[in-house]
Length: 321
Picture 1 (cartoon, one colour):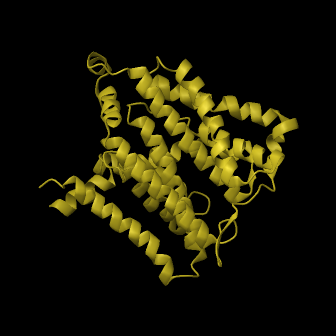
Picture 2 (cartoon, rainbow, N blue to C red):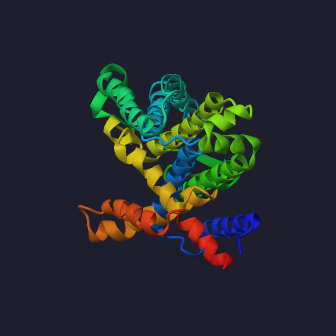
Picture 3 (cartoon, one colour):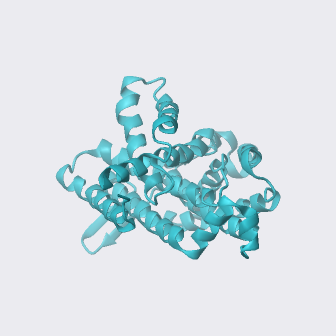
């Protein structure tokens, strides 16, 4: 028996409620607040990557958008002293600008050629920022960035910059909102148009779908959300440097989480991040301090061999059996 669509929504809602409720029973689990909060951030990053992948495009260069969003917000905060809650959304426009250039120069590329071009494109903003010492401080990076501010609701205060529990709930809210938007996008006419482009561009064109326009829209949405993730990351750490935010690691993680979680279901990328990142940080890093990241390679191999549609599809299939 096939699992009905609303059953997936019920499972996702139950998981969200569980993630929201567990801190009430473990108020001092600060390490878990930090790790699961970052897992939520990476889950949002995986969703952003999946928006573009929905059109059939495989990107290996989303670190460019992540880093530009981080530096866009950091520079606005450093030079103009604007609140991070403002600079996060404005600074991410730098990612969109690079996305426009990307769509212009890479619009004819497909498959492995697009993947290689996107990987090489990361070097363009990285090299510029790494050598623009007068503005970006170059490879030395920027420190002392404004932490996420405190939100006051009467006598109740949410110190997102210093309270790990408040920060966890902020990142959980972000990933839940991104998941809802992604689900709506997948079920919309635009989402079906992207699927048609992914399956057969010629047939999609004959149906009246403007392939380049729809793919560009997906890229711009993806780049902006990725930039927001990068900006959040910069202000959570309070520092930034080119090697940190323009790394291959940042480009690879959303691909890994999406493959493991499964991109056929709307919550697959988030599920992959929430399972894999805590596993790597809490289990493999203490056991193998030097090679703990190898778990990602092992997981991808096992997923391709045994769960080609991702762990989310396997779980829902088991539930419907």
